[in-house]
Length: 271
Image (cartoon, rainbow, N blue to C red; front, side, top):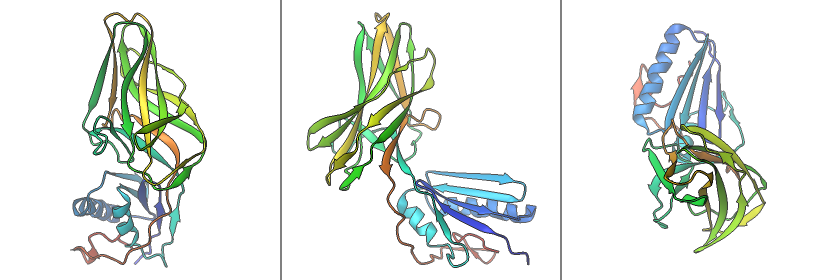
């Protein structure tokens, strides 16, 4: 039987299996394996790609599920490649469990629960869209660098911008760390990109990150409105930070969940 080659790569937010030298029958088998894995565990997202005889499967999930999937790989035959990276945080619709007037700013991919915030403008000026907050952080130093915001928004009439401020929250105190550039708000929904120069900052255990978004109205304020959207894959407002992704968790032993043609339902088919 022909030995097929497999590369396993751990990315900051997903694990990728790349199978080489696959015929059509084996690709069909792999598609069935992906579907079965998707029923066994909860994933934020699964992507597959086929390029000639190469089949790629990407599984996006939290670190606990990724940990288990790593434990299914025979690392003696298929060493795991690690791609270091930084965290991307998504603006979510859910209220924070501790600071309930803020919404969640977390790594989890959008929950497909559209949040649309409408801000009315009676005069020119700066108007808060809302605040989003991270989970409690572990003690760490976040490196300096560029934070890039991808914000879905639009306006009705007038002219204006959207921008962000980043704070460090200690208890109930919020310390301003950075303010982003300003991006023009379009007249139909589109993704606007702005950037902030984030300073190297130490966070104690339990400190949090807070991001506040703003509309800046420059002209034509009377009776006009601004709209901001997030928490769907189509309108996935987010910020790419300089937070370092922690090292991969230790490997777990092989977990047998079920069988399909003699292959574990969750173990990659290494034929």
